[in-house]
Image 1: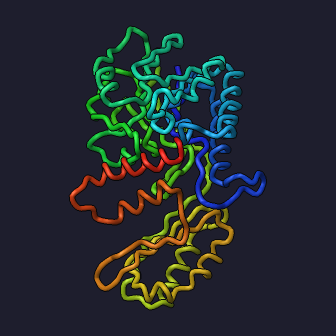
Image 2: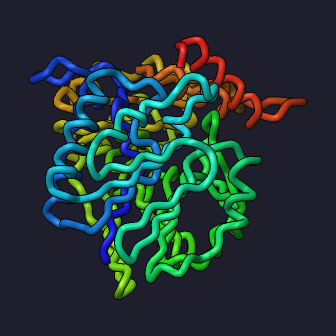
Image 3: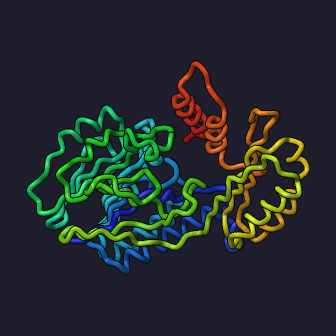
Length: 370
């Protein structure tokens, strides 16, 4: 019995200003569509007995018609190949108001596709395998059902969960509607627990793994390999199946302290020339930059070095005297990313920064009608 564990596909994700030359669509949106298609190509080649998607199928609660069309087409391919798929909702695809409804209802009519998006626990049998699914839901709702989860009499049992892990800060993202759970709830008598939410493949316990995302969504993921997990339940073998993705580099941080404009310009040039920039996404981080030195740099020359890159983001820490006063970037990311970046860079007194982040992101999304 082999299962494929995937998660965090974020279909519909967009970033930066570059358009795909063939379609005219946002380049990063197209990148994610192509990664999703390559993933399905790989699944058809590997032919697992069941595919488990552990949340955040789409990047938003209300995906575009284009994003839904891509997912429907690929799910129909798996259905035609008689490869069953179990989907659970993640925080990106769970509306805060229940009356909003879920796009997952569309998939209930596809043969062999089993979407679970309502609170509580859901179970589905595939021969000797029982899949126990916990879609994203309020903490108060999910804690008791997880605590009451007992192993069944099936030969194999696999759990599905989309959450960060308390006490392990890097498994949380600070997103609005994020669910964080105690790691003790993962010590369950299951053959495997398919986790979603953290974008890097990693083992949490001997039976609980994150598969990671299938494309890089932020510079925090630069250098990470992307793909999915293939798990042989009978023999306990776990294999990570890599997928090709657009290259992403985060260069630096480079310190400007004590350097002249020509020295810093040369060091920045060398950093950019150290990697293959063609079709890549690149961030260049520079710290301790006096404002006068920043004004002396030839930023156009740096941009010209990366003219074949999809995106170049020089990011400078501008200082006055001994105090750092701001980060300056020559490009803008999404409003959510800009707000989160702004909040992370400034001290907040007399308030919980995590609560401010959650409230702020919620207001931004509310303003967009999400």
